[in-house]
Length: 366
Ligand code: NAD
Ligand code: GLY
Image (cartoon, rainbow, N blue to C red; front, side):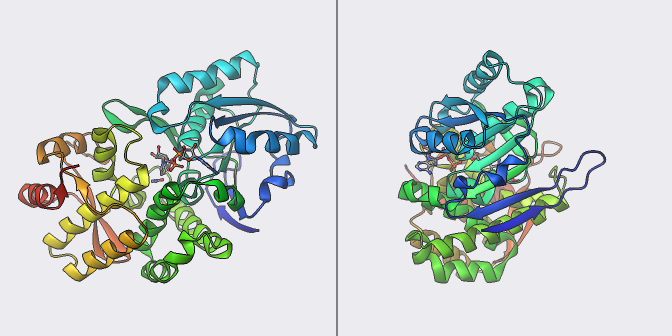
């Protein structure tokens, strides 16, 4: 097992937390027992992950006298909303969960984001543990404390920063992950290489086949390195007042795609991949990177089986949806652009003609 620590400064209670990464570590409840002092926990999962892992996980906890309340949500990005959040509150109240009853998220990023937001607001905040079961959640969403839900007008628009007490990423759970979901997770792994680690980008290029074959040690290396990057960024800028925004490479375009195509139709990682190509095309037209760099990025996504052509929504619709992005400041859109493979910057001055050109020339009818 490998452990990465997220070191967070604290004025009162300790807030730093471990990310444990390894095969079959869900059967090691000692990783969690320190956080389960009440010997009672609520476990939030969904109708897909529940049948695969819930009872096994509950039995492991029960063997250590921890009683658990299962909360099973409908599966899908389209359920990342108020109604589903309320299902969690209903269950927590019905089962009289208390202020020191931890809530465990067992699932992908949708379950993690919903559960984290519920934990942040139930009784004004209860302990929260992430047990991510998708590659995307293991390399990104379970770490860093962004929680929340979608709004019909915009993706991830309602939420809270709320850090977990621990993350337990059991890589064996990835055995059951559909190929398409694995590829979507690889999009977020590639992101770390693109924004801050050219050597890692090269490593992904040379290990992409093994990643797609789910070679265990290669997956663990990719998850560990991704979590180290995420931890470093979150430690430096927990609330995204600066460099954390770089983690949103491709997301301004990607969130617009997810919203316009209907939540769940394009997976988050797929929208990020196609969105990153648009960001790279803008960067190239701004004279920041060369055409060869854009081709290199595109080739890696193609090898990873990810989409590289964003849907043609029309520039107006893109601009309208991107105007709701959380990075907008003083009404001005800010984009994450590439100065090189391995170096990203926040840019507030992308000329409209360049945006319109990219959104017209580099998209295709869906
Ligand atoms: P997801 O949670 O929808 O999971 C993908 C699918 O895989 C679902 O059908 C799920 O039920 C299923 N699944 C999960 N684990 C499985 C397993 N082990 N075996 C078989 N099936 C399994 O999607 P995701 O890609 O994990 O997360 C995407 C979400 O994460 C988006 O809502 C995105 O906005 C959010 N996100 C949040 C952050 C953050 O920092 N909080 C970062 C990136 C993405
Ligand atoms: N996934 C973006 C962030 O955590 O900031």
